[in-house]
Image (cartoon, rainbow, N blue to C red; front, side, top):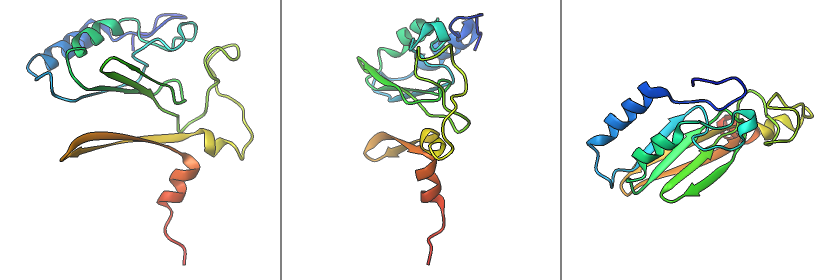
Length: 153
């Protein structure tokens, strides 16, 4: 992640070179899904919620017709679409954080015990081959536990 003190993370030269090389032989019609820890767009720079060299990675991805970039790190759902690229962050299974700029910085947010399962969650991606499509599902822990619990008789 190449964190800089009080600044944005970074992919670094090795990861950028790997990405460029990996994408070279792919058709522009290939759907691309990128999994990253840090947001690949700057959500809130003072808290380090972004990747400083993401622009270089985006230059490699912009020729593809469908790109989805998934990440965590900020422990909440934030999405945006920029051209053919959809960015989506996910909740955490550990602890919630305040929304960007609310409070002194990114840190565990103290919430009422009964609210915590509604603020934590899991994001899943389902990829179907025929027809080719990907769907995202953001599920709170309270919903996830209900879905996974055995049926009661």
